[in-house]
Length: 155
Image (cartoon, rainbow, N blue to C red; front, side, top):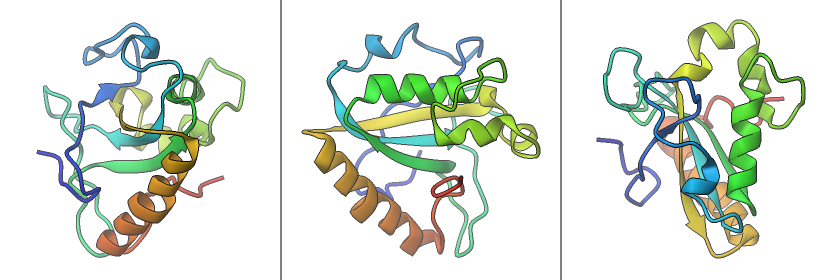
């Protein structure tokens, strides 16, 4: 069970790689309204688990059983998640998303794209998505674990 540090029930995890045996959809548009805003979380999956189970990550204060690597917000979740997924692929040249660093060593060895998943929560609009991301999700995460998620603020 994923922890409730965000203050709400965690939604289903969707692996980001279409060639993953864990992948469950063809297009983000299949599960997200194209105009939906919200907060998304990139999660490391446990490579030993058969189900989409988060990987337990060591943090400064305590272990993070949610496997959270990054918390982001967008006014258009479908588009942003498409950029994020593309940025983790080694055959993509564009910048797209800040997580393009995951294509580089040593990150790609420890967190290959095939072991990453995404979940999200819809918000009424872009502004409330960014407020939830900054004021609640990242702040609450940092207070609980002693630091921000590893790839937040990573350039």
